[in-house]
Image (cartoon, rainbow, N blue to C red):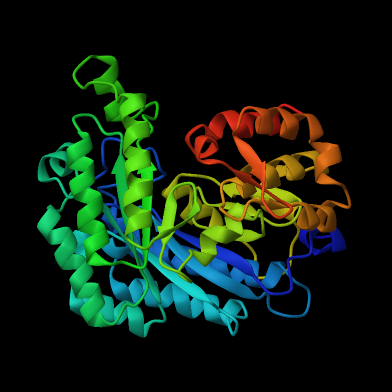
Length: 406
C-alpha cells in the first residue's frame, strides 16, 4: 500500500502547498548554506525536464483517482529568476497537468534585483505568477558588496519599480540585519527606504553564521567581526517600530505585511500543514510523513529519469535513492512542531484548533511549559490563543526549546 494513501495521511481537502527548487545562482553568496550552485548552468535544460518528470510522477502517486489539489506554489532557490522565463513556464504547465490548480491562491517567484526587467516580469505574470519576492537584503552599497550581492541599492529599488510597472500587485522585499559592519543607522536607512517603496510584504531576517560557509571561515580566522547579538536585538526592535508606524502588521516573527497580504505559502509551513517539495534538497511533509530529496542536482536528474511512469509506493522510491531523509512523524513530535511553528505567528496556537487536530487539551499536554513561560513573560493567552509577547519574539529559540524538551 502506498503510505500516502491511508486515511491517516490524507492531504487536506482544500489543497497542499507545492515548493519547486531552482538551485542555480550566477554566484553563491558567502553567507549562504542553501542547496544552491553556480557554474553548472549547462545542466539547466536537463534539470527543468527532470523537475517536470518529478511533478508528473507525484501527480500519479499522491491520490488514487483524482488529482491532488494545490493551494499555493513557491519557486525558491537558488535563484528562480536566473533561469529563462520559458523554463518556469514549462514547469507550470507540468504542474497544471499533474495537479488540480483550479483553487490556486498564490504563486510566488523568488528573484534577484539584477534579473528583473519589466519584460521578464510581464512574462512571469502571463505564466500565472501573482507574487514576486525580491532579495534586496540591504540598501547600503558597501554592505551589498560585502554580502556578494550582484546589485546596488539603486538597482534594487529600480527592480521593484519594474515589477510594479509590469503589473505585480503583491511584492515581498527580503532584508537582512545583524550583519558584520552594519550599524543601527545603516539598518534604519534600509528599513525606511523599503517602507517608503510600499511593497505589500517585507521579510526581515537576522543573519545566522552557518558552518561550512565562507563567512563562517572569515569570522573564525578573525578577518570579519562576529555580529553583536545585542545590536541585532536593537535592530529587530527598531524594525518592529518602523514597520508598525508604516502601517505594516507583524504576522510572524520575521515577516510583516499590509492587511491581507500574508504569504499564504509560508502560512502552510507555520501552521504545520501539508506541502510537497520538488527538486534536489526539497522537503515534503504529508500528514505523518516527512522526507527530503537528495541534494546533488546531477544525481537527482539521474534518479528522476529512472522513476517509472506508473503508481508505486514510497518504499520503492526510497530504494531508488531519491530521498536523503524519510521519517514517520509521531503524534508527540507533530504536537511539538505545531506549537513551535504556530508560536512564530501573531495568531499563535489556538486551544480549540489544537484540540480539534490532536483530540487533546493544550493546557494538559504542555501545562508546565506554558506556566513557566508565562511567568517569565515570554508567552501569554490572548482570546484562547497562546501567543509570544514582544520579549518572547526576541527570545523565540528559548521558548521553542521548552516544547522540544517534553
